[in-house]
Image (cartoon, rainbow, N blue to C red; front, side):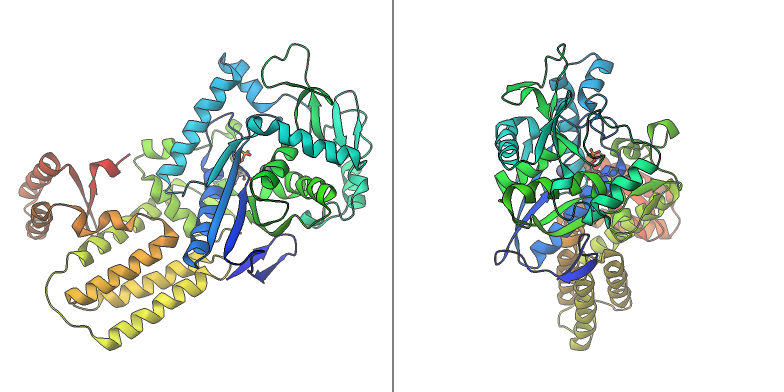
Length: 479
Ligand code: AMP
Ligand code: ZN
């Protein structure tokens, strides 16, 4: 397998630190509001990476944090903590906000078929470990104190900022000259960041009394600590959205490597942004969508997943409702293909030449998937595969073989192909659907509608007619 590494800025052969086990960390959400589809794009990309690794027979240990403290509005160590601010706005406690939006996020993961990380841990449950890491950094002389907190001196590390293709000198010069980023007073360098922030006297929730003072951890120290606690001082892959490259992940590298003296991460994996109608997604532009918003517009969450799969994870995805609609159509057509192919029940024997041709398309699919997770091209290989299959009158043995390959593709795609196998519904329902198809082709729409109602009532199966044929859903699948 090959993987692009943001640090080295090139594709490299993937070779984990230890044999067939992959230690993977993904920065989790800041749970102060609903996750939007931009956030979810990043988690889908990470999921596809993970599924590809699993398909390549790696055992993946996946850790994700939940940022429930220390992430400030503006990311500049000034301003309020995002969660405390939202709690005030909604007249709820921080704990209520955290619980509510964490549940909502977990629900989105499920709807999008994202495999749950092996460990999900809240930042606030790991403060003691963060303090231990801060202590190490303090003993090694990397920290200093101001009126607002304890800061990491970025001038003391070699190669600060390499991840974003910059350097300590360049960044400090640029940030001084450019539009001023609001930073706390008393910093030695503009790039320095808080590992511990002092709380205000009136703050009661999410504050800790420590030898460094009463307060709460900085956002970056959370991730460094949780990486080391759950995976070790060195890991294989660290994931996040592209916005994390220049500050969050650069700071994670600085403090982790300062503490251990070892290379922190072997491969940095960053997903490009999702934008809406050519613009950044933001509340003020009223173009923020959640998965629930898409469902209200009658889109399946997996149609959004399909759309994400059609754009390479390192390219910007320009979201519009029109492109989502065409993704929705394509996914339904795939479901029709799966149910029709799995319904083939006659004929035996296998045409060896046919099998050879479709096997080569299968191999091309996985070759592309293993080449820096090039899923868009892999998907075109899947369609070439399908087009070859569609031209042939399949025997049952051949149809079974085709389905086996489609399910293999789906190990990586995660589009729930298995839910659309003909065997998933009762034989009588499948027979009725077939009969209805004939009636529909004969344009007896009234009768076709009656059968549709009957199937819905009797079997709780919903039918939808599309240009490719009739797609059915078990009602448990509908959101
Ligand atoms: P946050 O909750 O802000 O920490 O973000 C959670 C994840 O979503 C991070 O990995 C971000 O980099 C990522 N992210 C935020 N906005 C977008 C976007 N518009 N497109 C893709 N990923 C995003
Ligand atoms: Zn992080």
